Length: 350
Image (cartoon, rainbow, N blue to C red; front, side, top):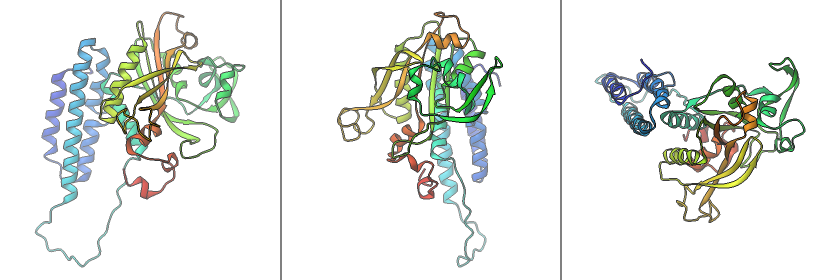
């Protein structure tokens, strides 16, 4: 299918889905249909990549319509799933006293479900999904992000360093590190792509720290990077509010507070209006009406230079936050350790 996206092509996909859903007879057929129409390699997902090529006035219209189509398809699949699970007794004789053979059916972990939902939302907004190595050299994890060996910002990272070393692109020996953020992928992406572009970078990250109800040594992070000729904080704030409104399915407001990060200048901590009390003040937000989410800012020009861009030629913003934290907020989970605890009583709830 052509990558060019239009309302007509989206309607055509919905029409094909409506035709095929009637032939679904069991749960396996339904899952195959879901993958065919909503999977990352489906025609629908491929079409969504074309949103970034549309004119500004068309992006919102097509993006909103694509999001509606996705919700309609998901709703129909969920209804069909409930119908199939209800089951219908056929006319054959059944011995109701015979012991049943219950088959356990697995499903995606709640963190995988949350990451998938985030990717789907940003795809409708014209973002591409970038992926990078979890084990990387210190150039991409630190140096290229304006944190050289003697930079005090390195003291902010409690890092898992590997014993072995590896040569970088220049043939120099460098230490290997379990990445402390997914920003290493941002630099790798910029080396191979020219602006303008919009990407999201979800993935696992690692910090050498003690675990408690709010901290883990291994957790999932999500970063966004937008680069172009005329990008501003206003663009970031608009995109952030749209994303959180779709994710939490309620109107969300974003607030920025001055902060410091070596890879952005200026830098901000950003908060969202409390999802529990809608910003009125409650125990969850300590009666402030705001929940702290993550860090953001305009990309430091030194990071652009490290990626091979001419200084001052482009502008961009980056932001990052924990997928675990978003899942905790959305599903009212009070202990981050539950995600990796392996307790089936917890996992089966989602």
